[in-house]
Picture 1 (tube, helix red, strand yellow):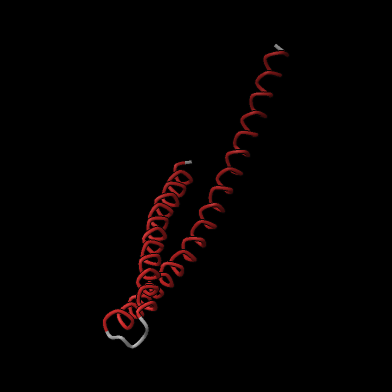
Picture 2 (cartoon, helix red, strand yellow):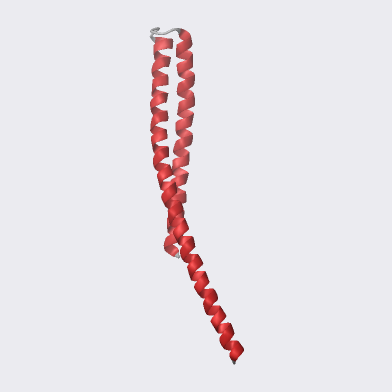
Length: 113
């Protein structure tokens, strides 16, 4: 009988540790979601900046290729810069979309526990 009480006591201690670990895990997941949300806000700023630089590249391309305000080479460089920044904008946008889905999954996991 003593052995059974000892085993039940150990099980209870083990369950308490699991609850503690589970609480710690939820806390870590909440912190991770908060950090990823801050990172997503920074990425939104980067996406805006990349869009603005892409627009400037298009303006340079127009002024160099069509309007002849600048030399032809400036227009070509502006066109290349516009393309590169447009691709960067797209990649950052995709990162934001996947990041939001990841944060939603983390929050759903924390709520389910």
